Length: 315
Image (cartoon, rainbow, N blue to C red):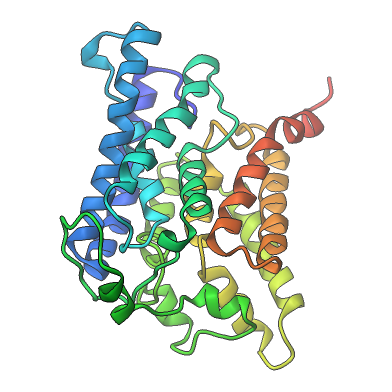
C-alpha cells in the first residue's frame, strides 16, 4: 500500500495488522499451532531479508530498517498456503516478498503485489507441496520441518475449489465454507474472519470497496451464467465466491494501494476488479486452481497503469 509519511505508514500497518488478527486466530483454531509458526516465519523472513536492503541500498539507520509492512506481507503470503507445507518453504516465501517489494522502495510503486506474487511462485514451483490440503482440526506438529507424506494422506481431503473444478459442489454447504470449516489455505478458509477484517478496514477508511465490489459482483454474474445444469445457479455462485483464494483476494489483495489504481480514480478501481474477476473465471476454466486465482490478480496489477491512464479525468 502507498506509504507517503511515517505517520501514515505506521497507521496503515496497524490497521492492517488489526484486520488480519481474526484471520490468524481462526487459522490457528482450524489448523493448530503449526499455522501460527508458518505465518510468523514467513513474516519474519520477509522483514529480515528487507533489512540489508534498507541499510545498504536505501541508507536507512539500522533502527528504522525493520519494516512492519514487510512482515505483514509475509503473513499474507503464508495465508495462501496449506498447513502441510514444509517449514523451509517459509524462507523462500520471505525472500520473494522482500524481492518483490524492492521496486516500491525506489519508485513508490511496485508492479506486482508482493504477498500474492510470493504465494503464486510457491504454488507454481512446488505444486505437489502446496496442493496437499488437509481437513480442519487435523493438527500437525508445530516445529516439524517436513510433514511425512503418510501423515498428510491420512487427513487429506478435497477442497471446495477442487470439487468445483470437477463440476461438483461442496456437500457440507455454503455455511461451512463461510464459517471456515472447509479445507483450504491457512487464511483462504477463514471467510468470516476475512469479512470482519475487511469491515474494519472500511470503517477506518483505510480501503475503498470499488475494486472488491466490482470483483465479487462480476464473479457472481459469471458463475451463475456458467453453472452446470445439474446444479442450482445460486448455490454454484456462492461456492464459487467462497472457494480458493477469492475471499483473501477480495479482502486484501485488491485493496493494495501500491499495485491497484489510485484512490481518486474510482472507475479505474472498478475496472481493476472486473478485470481480475474475468481472469479468475478464465484460469478456473483452465483448471489452474489456487494458482489461477493468484495469477489473475498479478495480471490485473500489471494493467493498473493502463487503467489509470484510460480513466484519468480530462482537463
